[in-house]
Length: 180
Image (cartoon, rainbow, N blue to C red):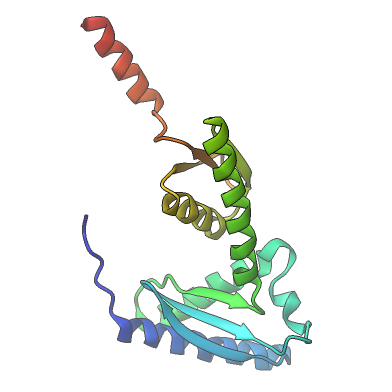
């Protein structure tokens, strides 16, 4: 397995560029919020945070995080414009992604328990790429297997007890069995 080399200084610079862009956006929209910058694994992580009692940033999240996803892409483009490099930064607004991660972890753990009990695959609800990644990570940590199926925007995660046999692999195994 190839080890990914992380340039923390580059990721911190991405976070700074993103923070500058987001601060301008907040000023234009006349919204209050503080920007937190961090490095999470191999990507910059930026969060717009507010006091717990404030709900003013909800419109930057939108229904099911749709506005947040769009804002993240715009922020990535702004960072790319500054650095000349594609950015994989993650953006959170008012703790939405953190809360969603906790919900998805619980949902996936329930599916894992069901798969372990029955041995049958379990399909989860359709999700965006961030949500599917969270589920795949939880499944891998539990020692099970998962795959994405379907077509966007209705792609979903399937949890398996063992590695799924692909259709081509199954056909090759059947051909091999017939020849033996």
